[in-house]
Length: 278
Length: 316
Image (spheres, each protein chain N blue to C red):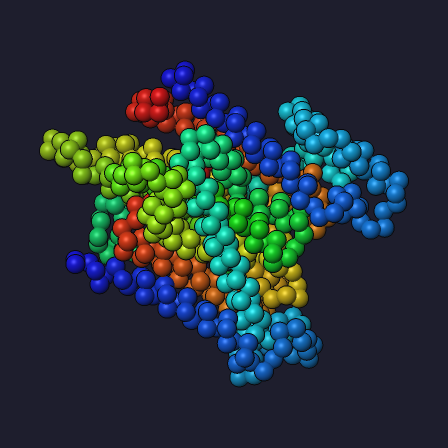
């Protein structure tokens, strides 16, 4: 009972921010009369005003609509990475916790993967596979899966020792029944919390990659590449840095609040994640 | 202790071997023929044959890996495809700016986070504590390159206190060197300090209501001495571990920040190599940075074990 109302506040703020972003991504493009790819050299670097709500870029393209399309990319990539790495993470984590021989193999692979700094690994993968949205999703999923797998595993190790698991075992439940029907539901709260953090960090990583020119490439709109374009004209076009920056910070903040709030609400005890190098 | 050291070093070797396997196999992710992808469609059949032979791409996989690993272990990281020079030489040339930036950023981070974390823990649940926590939240959600962009906009463009971008070698004077590195290091340091502040606060809080702190107070020690000497000493180990682990955050930030401030470091080198698809360079950098990161953390682990017997006895 106590603190019940208090702990809901971050979730409300977080999900409102997320809802606004989703609305922006879904309906933003319809609100604007502009085309995200149409160049208009006469209107280069117009400051925000009635015609162009968030100004125009170096090719005279409307920033508002490009940010809205960028939001679609960001949210899509973030969601897919969170979903896929949760899926892989729960499979790897559960099986590693259940079978001793798999544990060593799978966890050493995760240790190795997470020893490589994430953005470097993503850059290397992108350089080899070439730029595309699919490849960004693949690269970032590879980066974020080990962490999720490790959290699922350490949660599952505790669950495995619970009496009810032993009971199913004694009743003759098969291994896969125990893993999927009895153990996986108990791990879901921790997984959901971790997925929201993975969502946030995927959005951030995509922006970093695109900022570096290793992610979504021009003329496709991305928050990261719009931020990149602002660096060349930093004194002249502040709106090119401010609006995509604000969107990026808002989305990461929203998802972090959601994750933190959900963790407190569901009383998930996340084991302190040890990164590689142990 | 000897057993502990060997166990740790053993696990380090295993991790590095796995890392090397991953980094090695990145070449095989190139869609289609690696030689054509690197050399371009116009490459003659002869060039492609030469390249394939030079890279050993016509050999069985395990032979290729063995050769590659053998080369790495003897300090031969291969040649850059684009620059036609040894990878290690190119990396060595770009290393000093990145190391300077990382050290400077780490110092700024410690300078900001240790006092903030201590004060927040000591004044728990006051406005001061909430303020510090709010700033660490900002530090977590603000990516360092965004912070850098805003700092650049304000301090370099508006106030003109610092150069907008560029780099001055240490040989040309420490002051100039630091002046160019200040904004990039500050933005990295702030991002870094968020993590360390949280950890300092959390681990100090855990210690502050233990009975030996009560004892220290009961025997009439001044508060400053209780917190700084008795509490901080025992809270220090997790803080040091966090610093080691957040090295990865630091490097990640540095790669992006370098491109923003036109600093000719490792980040710049890896970026130039992406568009050239110069995989030997990229593999080399990823490997060097990862080895560095793993070794730092092993050293911290060993120190941890040496200082605190519970750590090394626990795992045996």
